Amino acid sequence: MCLALALFSVLDTTAKYMATVVQLPVAQVVWVRFLSQFLLIVLVTGAIAIPRLLSTRRLKHQLARSSLMLCSTVLNFMALRHLRLDQTQTVYFLAPFVVALLAGPFLGEWVGWRRMMAIGFGFTGILVVVRPGYATFDPALLLAFGSMLCYAGFMLLTRYLSAYDAPEVTLFYSLIAGTLVTAPFACAQWVWPTELRVWLLMLSMGFWGGLGHYIFIIAYRHAPASTLAPFIYLGLITHVAGGFLVFGQVPDEWTLAGASIVVLSGIYLVHRERVILAQRRAEQAAAARG
Image (cartoon, rainbow, N blue to C red; front, side, top):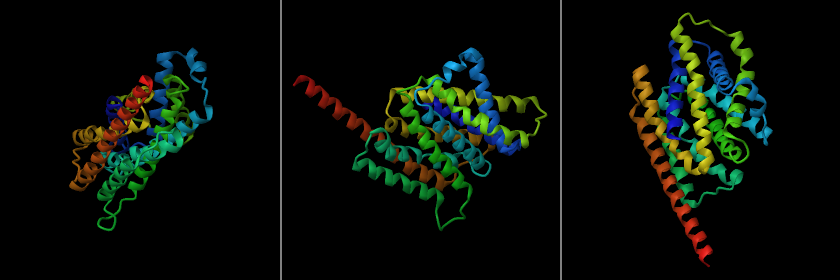
């Protein structure tokens, strides 16, 4: 999960560079991101493997997950045109809390009152970042918030589908909505890059995204959603590094304070998950001896 988050940070940094410095249309950046990853999978597996990759036991869930990934990507890339990398990542910190809340009704992984309090505490951290009533509200934060909600649903479906389909199948379906739906919008707004460097950067988004999501799926095959979700906080370090190295951006004190609150809440969620797992194992061991 940590490696996947690092790759996602490289993807976001590249996308922000394409949209702000090179000033390519968002639709073009999104489509190239999905298309290049699609071509990479075909290159690695071979065209003959496509029928096998399309074979799924949960078609509706795969299409829903693919649509959520597209919506999350579009909203995130739009937000990145106006916000710093650390700002969008801090809003994304809400995703583990949304996952923890929804994992009960959707996955049967319920949270107790202690973790519910941690979730509430984590939401206050986002209020520190946004500072409603004390600072000029940037509408781009709503784009980041919408992207986060889509990402939370994406995480839940990743966990659900890990029990039914191979990682390669889920990864392939991730690209269908993005490749097909955004194609006409990208073609209508297409701007031809004149530098080889820009072409290489655009195509690299497929590599960062493809490898990151493959590792992401593998992680969810081996651990519960509520356990893996808080590790998203490590992405703050890599996003801050990308923002500083590429754009010279430094997080302000409000973003750091709010992120610290959310991270502390997430660490507590991890601690409670470990305690609960230990209790379950002890109960199972006692039942086996009995």
